[in-house]
Image 1 (cartoon, rainbow, N blue to C red):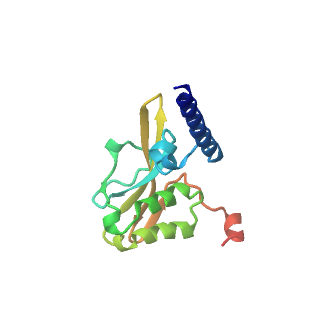
Image 2 (image 1 turned 90 degrees about the vertical axis):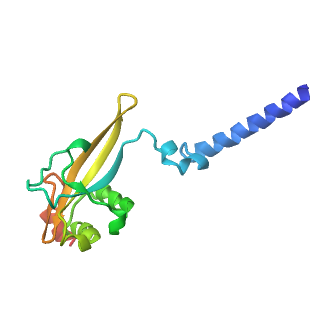
Length: 167
């Protein structure tokens, strides 16, 4: 009986040692868990994008951060309209300086729909607060329609020096 316990103990120790080494060399993530964001990124702040069709709204666009219950317009479905939601979320969340080229890139995602729709692209920011509560905020970023584009007043744009050195 003691021989079986010793063998089981060595096997358990070896398994835990291999697991610890794998986790230590992969910054706390080990394969079965790293591919699932619910395990590898749980509790971290997140950013996504939402598009609203504000074609029927008579009021001008307001640039204030809002909650889900106060969103303007109607939802604009991305996938049925040929826009990949992950690409859009990355585009919105990772753009630091909104150059004319970046704005045109965003417009190109929605080009077939702009003659018929006025669209408001919003960044959705979420974070955990006080234990189990999640706060989600909707920030209007870009308002587009057929002939113009308006950016949120606080978004960073290139300066004259930046544009002169990097066309």
